[in-house]
Image 1: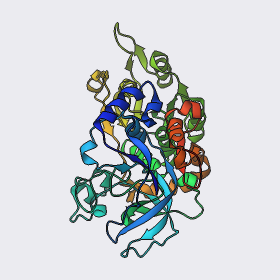
Image 2: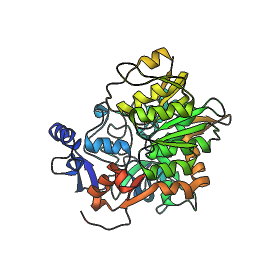
Image 3: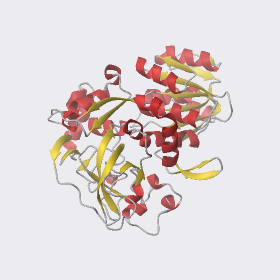
Image 4: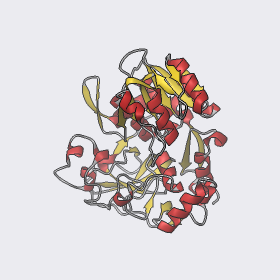
Length: 413
């Protein structure tokens, strides 16, 4: 089968990291760590596993950080190589293990990619998995499959950037009838956004909530706030015109463009904050937003996030940070901010009940499918993987909030 595979190589990693900053195409060139390969379909690790053929597979920011070697090496000892990328997907069941009785070939499913204790055949579960937080599993290097935090970063499971991968029955959600693939491929990132909006909610109606970055996660965070009933005054910060339009359609009250001091001046005006400029360094805010969702994870966005939060405010780190530098932490100390990382999904408290984040994501997708499906803006066959990654890396040029692989398409390499 065809698959886009990541092979571990320190030399290639270093070369890609050095070159891709200036020439992004170097990440998919001869010196890169990823390539389109022919490989055997992965076997079912146990009878509780299922094989799935992807229909659509999304390109995520974490995938791009892996391809361009721009992310942190933090996860490298928790993964197994070579792995096939891809964890955002809707697909069809092709093979079923003997212990799976409620799925049959042809069933359409959505993947929840976390590789927790139950998936790994480990009992009793670790404390995180017992609490329903499989994404924080403490045993991601043990059990029935090789190390890996989730599908798409594990040697034995394969990934959705391929013609087939395998998943434990626990990871698969039957697709609601009538819900289009274009909506379902957003289930995983939407679950991430819902998780962040529930873990760091605006405290009161009318509170200013700033969403920094209007890529897929930022846009879905806006959608999550509105789906959960928040009446916060949402201020979104976007870089591109298509992001501005989508942010407004999804429920942002105002969408701001720009960066640096001009952006800071606009945020101060919108939040009613006083802005003071020191002799050296960026603006100092007195006042600001009740909550800031950093959906970028860059040094610049994190620095802005802690500046924009008011005293006693909260900052949610939703975008995946690498190893940012140059952040002035004085605001965290002086304003007694709460900074919380928001990773993946699990079990949430919603309307007094405990419910899986993915269940909420599928429910809200069904309610908002026509609008959310607009985020899927570019499709490529696996063979055109270089063009697909280029599209995802340069959303300003492509105009696509979410780039996907479409396994029904032919194409060229």
